[in-house]
Structures are given as structure tokens and as C-alpha cells.
Image (cartoon, rainbow, N blue to C red; front, side, top):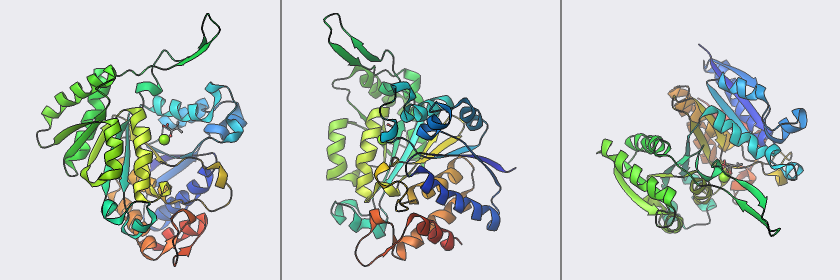
Length: 358
Ligand code: IPM
Ligand code: MG
């Protein structure tokens, strides 16, 4: 049966990078036997402009009926002044929640050809390969109560709630240990257990779950130290499992180890392996519409989709090998350009990956 894929381009550079990923899917279907059907939907600012809501019901229904979803990016200055509940970001958060994609897998790896594009020394990052497992539909992002209210004295207060249940911690810990079994079998759980009760419980539950994975070595680290260690000696890490907000922050930090945030894909998985796939970069409104964004993070997100949700391992390898070849051939978008390389546009980068498919 053909895999059903829903495409959600979103805002900013989202549509441009997603177009290149679609081009690739199209060629995999027409020349390499991949059986897929593609459908398109609205999300974010684009959805607000068309329907008055950042996540139309139709998009949720289509997503729930799909095997996998490819998402571009959302947000931009145009929608920043909107009421909080109507902002593009809320659309993405609501979609993650509606789909139950609790596990966000974000690899941070360094492509050998791009070592010089990082601001860190080559010996610090060479052969780096970290997998972040970020809890995605709980914690302070979703905890209630939340809001901005006015106190009796007329002063306003803003508040959010950091809350994790044992079962939420257990399922993300299991995911991290399962992922580690296919890697170097080391997991670092990142928390702030010295200050925050929610993560004191996190540490306790993770320490219990690991008893089912005797092959895996578990270590705990406070988030402030983890931020420091990621810059100082990132190769000490294999899998990092952490809360929604710590994962948001640390994965952006880690993306810079790899040279450009424009290179890194991500997968958000539910209990059954259905997934939402997206580049980890944002909508980059400053460069939107200029045909200069790097589509490789989105293209590599398609590879993750083929591997994790559609079980098309050969097709996933095919994409990753094509991307490697393009990098080896010196083809670079502006964000990863260094002297002597061939500077290409978004479209040309997509064409180059298609041409490198074997
Ligand atoms: C991410 C983004 C989102 C998040 C925003 C756009 C809501 O920063 O995917 O990392 O905070 O999760
Ligand atoms: Mg983020």
C-alpha cells in the first residue's frame, strides 16, 4: 500500500525548503519505486491568513489519517501581534499534542565536509554524533495553570507550570533507552533536580526505568552543566534525554556544533511510530522568498521519515548518501558556504541532491 504523506509547508522559508523535499519524493516515486500519495495542508500564519486559525480542524483530521507528516516552519513578524492563542507557534504545539508525538528525536552530527563551517575547533567536533530525545508534549510548554493576570495591586504577573507525571517520564525514558540500544548505549538524562521538584521526579523515574535496560549506561547531569559540557567536550555524549524546554534550548545549542542549523532534521514520534518530521530551524523571515535557504535539513527530515515511520530503509540511505555526495562535491548553500566551494540557491541544492540519487 502507498504511504500517505501530509505536507505542511507553513511560513517563511518553510514553503521553499519543503518544495525541494517534495521534488525529491517525487523522483523517488517516479524513478526508484517508492509508493506514496501526497496531500497538502495549512498550518501557522498561512493557515491563519486563509482560515482565521493557526491549526484548522481539516489539518488535524488529515494528519491523523496520514502515515507521516512533513512540516516546514512557522511564524513571522506579520503574526507576532496576534492574540496568543492565534499565533502560528500555537498551531504547531497543538498539532504535536493532537498527534500525541511525545518523543522528539534531534540528531546533532557533524558532516566531515562541514567541520570548518562550525565556530568550534575541528578536534572538538570531528565525528560528533549526538541524539537528543526531547519530551515534546508535556512540561512547562503545556502545564496548567498558565497565563498573564493582574493582581489586586494592579501589577500583572505571568506564570506557567512545569509538571511531569510518572507515566510521561517513563515513556520518554524508554524511548531514549531504545534509541541507545541502536547506538553506543549511553544515555545522559538532563534535569535540574537540585532545584525543581518536577525534575527531581524525572531523575527518580529515569533511574528506575533503566533497570529494564541493563545494557545501557545511564548518567544524570544538571542542565547548566550540560550546556557547558556540550560546548566544552560534546563527544562525551551519545543519547541525551530531557524535558521539553531544556530540549528546545540545548538542541539549538547543539545544532551550532554541526556548523549550521540549516543541516539538522528531526522526527517527532507517537507510541506507534507515526511521526511529524521537520527541520529544526525556524521560518527565518529575514531570508524568506529569496531562494537562498538551505533545504538539506528538510531533505534529511524526509530520510528520517522514510526510516522511522515508513520503514523504507533503502530509500532513506539513498537520500543520505546523495546529501553526502553533494557535500563532497563542494556544493554549498549560503549558510554553509566557505571559500572555494560552489555557492548554490535553494532550488539548485534540491536539484543537486536529486541528481546525486542512485
Ligand atoms: C522548536 C521550536 C518550537 C518549540 C516553537 C516554534 C514553538 O522552537 O521546534 O524547537 O519551541 O518547540
Ligand atoms: Mg526550538
